[in-house]
Structures are given as C-alpha cells and as structure tokens.
Length: 282
Image (cartoon, rainbow, N blue to C red):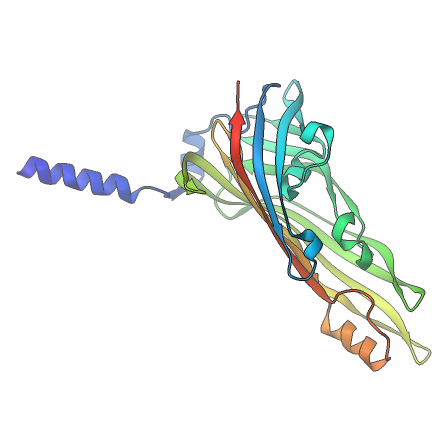
C-alpha cells in the first residue's frame, strides 16, 4: 500500500512539472542546438493576420523557410523560393545572416516598416547588427539587446510636407525558459521564450495662425512587438506579432483646432501569428 502511495505521489509530481519554467541554470544545463543549420533543413509555418482598421491585412498564408547558405558559424535563411516571407518574424529572420554559438543566436539584418507605416513618415529600414534573438545563459526578464537612435522624416498635411522628428528603441528580452511547454497542442522540451520590440516617439511642428507649434505626433509606444519561441533541436516553433500605432491626442486636438482634416487613420492594430506546421531536419 505504501509503495502504491509513493507511485501516486511521483506521478502527481511529474504532471505538476509540465509547462514549468526555469531560469538560466536550467537553460545552461540543457543547452543544445536551438536552431539546426544544415543546408537541407526547412520549416513550414501557417501565417494568420488580422486587422479591424485595415481589412487588406486579413489573410492566411504559408511560409516555407529554409537554410539558403551555411558557412562557419553563420547561416542565411530564405523563404518561399526566394520570395519575401509573409510572417513578421520570418521577415526578420530572412533579412540577413544569423550567427550561432553554443548558447546564443544573433542577427545581422534589418527591420522594414515601409509596408504599414509609410503614411506616418516611418518608411524606415532599421539596420540590425548583433541583435541577440536568444541567449540561453541570460536570466529570465533580462534585456539581451538594446539600440536607440533618432531620425527625421516628413508627412503630408494639406499638400505641405510637415517635418517629423523620431526617437526609437529596438530591444530583445528573454522572457522565460521552459523545460516543457505545450504550444498549439504540441508539447516541446526545452523552450526559449523571447520578445523583440520596437518603440517609437515622434514630434512634429505645425504652423497655427502663423505661429509654429511643436507637439507630440506619437507618444512613446511599441509599434511592433513579437513574442517568439525556439525549441531545442527544432528551431522557431511559434511567433506572435502585434504592430500598430495611435496618434497623440495633442496632435489630433491641434488639427481639430486648426480645422485641418486628418488624411491618415488615427490608429490601427494588426495581430499575426506564425505556427510551425511541418519541418525536416538533417
């Protein structure tokens, strides 16, 4: 009887550990290849996108991502027979070269905003150098990479190009490490959870009754956030992206006071996901 109770206790203990997270020590002990890089490897993802404000961004597609080239400790990825990827994270992963160590994956690539933000004067292609996508030795909730800067552009208001000054920050963070995690009804062992975020704040100057008024165009906000998961011996198994913006009340009130019509949408949000559906690794 005591033996049966002992077995029951052990069974309950094991089940209670499912989807359990751990910090850097567990990740270090289980460190292996979180992005297999043989040239014949490929991953297929179901991409879903939706937006209430922009119906053109409602779609379902398939991304086929594969290792295009492998050399030394670096690899380059391509998608869809050389076409652009449909998923936001796959766009980032295929934008340049990935560099691997036993515990890290870094990207030299780019982050292109031209598709959905050009009307805001944000048609910017951000260069990414040594952007850390995962660091198995990092602590949970720690910042793995950060870069900030400024640039200027303009937006059309009543046939006039109005200057916009923009501050940005790009950041990646380790959110968690799981010994076991169920994602899309599939259980994976040793899963790294990370997040990439691009935040922006912007000011613009508008002439009101002959006097220039400088106001916040965008209050500081994340215009892109991607939560992603890498599983040991598989690669990326899931990514969930949110992108969008909300113009500041200060800017909208100034346009209303000056009786200037707004020619762009005051806000929009797009949610998308990339779900691993199939893969072949050698």
